[in-house]
Image (tube, rainbow, N blue to C red; front, side):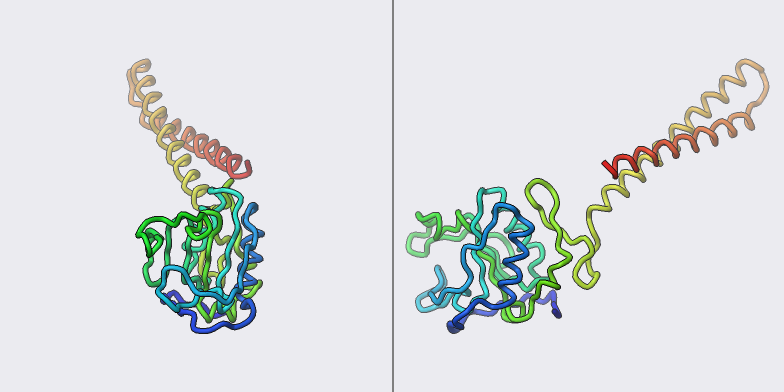
Length: 241
């Protein structure tokens, strides 16, 4: 599937009669990634809420998925995933827990009952019991299971990330903390080794009464190497754990 980072929003104009293949592919992958999320519905020929009289919901074209969720944490994770990868996956709208996001308004904002200007009394209308994810027409028609195969989830809440990325565009963020920790440990080992070497040099000078430059350098180098080895071993063990 050819994707673009250019924001696209396609209003629904008619009822298509069936779920779009891209919506079905995305729905199947999300419920694999987020235990506690199930498919609540995709196609339904009906008007949208809060979009003005006569407007149709994205469900009418079969390109919106309602994910029923088992709790707030699951809903938060699904909604965060949808927004984070919206441009890559062709997601144009997300509604969850009285909040909405779209490519027309790309920031979370209140999703209110237009009749009262307040949150919907109904948990379903306020999307407090499910997450709505809508696709643009290109994604709805062309997104496939193969496009979504590299999507992975990690963490207790199922916070999603790409390990290899669609088309190799994204790199796993899981590697970055390990590299950063290794770098810090190596630097710490070198600093400790050098400091101990200087202390040894001062001790030798005090005892023998003669310069100990070469002795200090040898000690510092040896301790720095030992510190680096220990640091690398610690980082490797932490990464495996």
